[in-house]
Image 1 (spheres, each protein chain N blue to C red):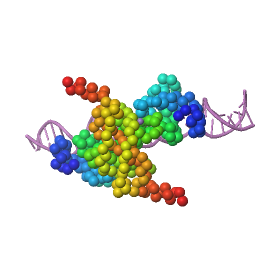
Image 2: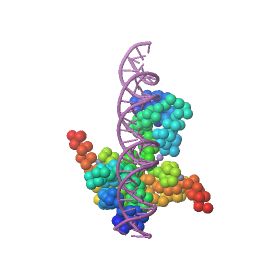
Image 3: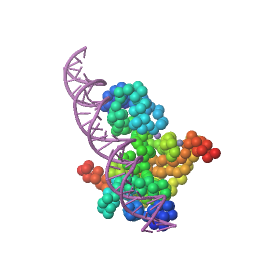
Image 4: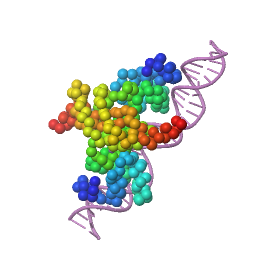
Length: 139
Length: 139
DNA sequence: TATAAAATGATAATATTTATCAAGTAAGAA
DNA sequence: TTCTTACTTGATAAATATTATCATTTTATA
Ligand SMILES: [Mn+2]
Ligand SMILES: [Mn+2]
Ligand SMILES: [Zn+2]
Ligand SMILES: [Zn+2]
């Protein structure tokens, strides 16, 4: 989201908001609110955690980011608002994007009357780093 | 999990544990710890919420149930430990099972070195109840 | 019954998120 | 430029969810 879009969305250009957006831009880590807060403190030592939460919620409302339910411990945020899937390391909780367009047809009989509007696939696995650590522990 | 399996897993047969297992058996609601606790209070007015959490964690460790990451607010538990997918109402958070076996091939080039061991699909939609409520509000 | 290991329940502690609200700021109008 | 107002921030309290601690009780077995 650039300055233009922010204004179009009826939001004010505050330094805090711009810093958070700047941090999120091209960020593939799927950070938590706490992660973002800590990164902000380096440049804005007075920024409140509440501001981080407020900003994230505002951006989510406007469709600029999405909240991803992939970590049972905490919310994590994705600066890419378009539908895509994720690869999750069950050991270190790292999350990577997987951009593949699967055609997931659900037969009417299994929809239970639901109107399906989207989907999200979580692939579980072990990342290269964790695999290495595990093999070292073995030997 | 029946009495036999509980003993085989090295667990003791306590009234609380049996009551929780009994409540979960054939339960398709994907209840939260709080949901389970409230249901238990009717029969065991002294049961502690800690016991519910302890029991759920023990059962999960033993592979008798699974914890499903589908609700950003709280953990929800699924008495069916086998892999299956879910249909989630984005409005009321109701969760239904979808038992369909999709073949989700991930090309090696997109695995980023991960060793993939499983997957889980969340289908998002609006349940019949919520659809009805929404159409009433419209008119 | 006696014993040891495991489990429970009360409660404290921690972690995460949301609510409240006074004070400060951005943006358009005058 | 100054004024005005709605929006935003930051400090902090409150709410919610989960985990830890530990004395007491219970289960399973001998
Ligand atoms: Mn992503
Ligand atoms: Mn299920
Ligand atoms: Zn890992
Ligand atoms: Zn619904």
